[in-house]
Every structure is written in structure tokens, then in C-alpha cells.
Amino acid sequence: MHDPKTKVETFRLKLFVADFDARRRFYAEDLRWPIEYEWGGQRRGAMFETGAGTIELLEQKDAAWPVTSCDVSLRVADVWALWEEWRGKPNVVDGLRDNPWGDTSICIADPGGFRIVFFTATVKRK
Image (cartoon, rainbow, N blue to C red; front, side, top):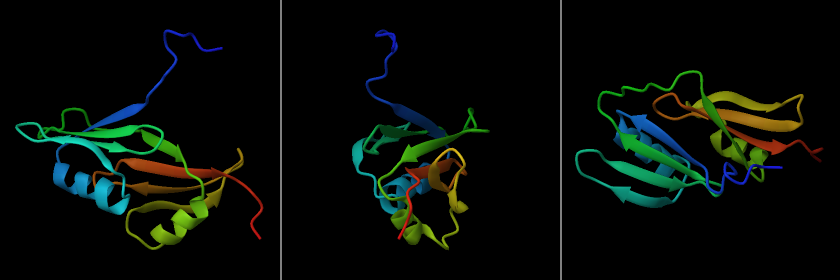
């Protein structure tokens, strides 16, 4: 049972990025995630609704906190259909594969190299 004080009600992943325009374009146009909220000024930002949580981009010119040894895994309804859309694109890190723990996944990277794994529970395909 979850401790009620730490049970997560909303998940938000914040990425501090120097290449804000390229990353914003990727999440808005390539992944087609709706922008929940966006702001300008000295430190631009955008929040993308993924369905189960939020990916937030925060512009940081010096990129003081580089993302290393980290990725995010997102369950989707049909990873096979998503693979048909992404097959052959330069952002693909790992193609469609069945994993021994019971899912099928693909891995792509955003323009800054942040890895995003999409997966679906493995089922027998006809």
C-alpha cells in the first residue's frame, strides 16, 4: 500500500535544455503532444501533456544539469503502430523488440539525446 503522503497524483518530468526551439518542435510536431501551457521571457518553457503526465521543457542556456544515464518509459496502446510511423527516422535508438519482461518497445531520442522508450504489453500478433 502507498504511503498517502508520497502517493503520486500527477507525474511531471522537467528537462532543462539549451536547445529549446529544437526540443519544443520535436515534442509538439514529431510526437504531437499538446502544449498544456507555454511561457516566454528570459527563461522560456513549455509543458506537454502526454496523457499520463507532463513533460516540461525549461530553457537553460548553460545547460548546467546535463541529462546522463537516464530515460523515460511510456506505455502506449499500440507500439507496433507507433513503430510504423518512426521506422527509418534518424531519432530511432532501438527498433521494435520483444523484451523478456513481457513488453514490446521502441526507443527514440529527442534532439538533445534524451531517450524516450515507448512500450506495450506483448501480445501474439496475427
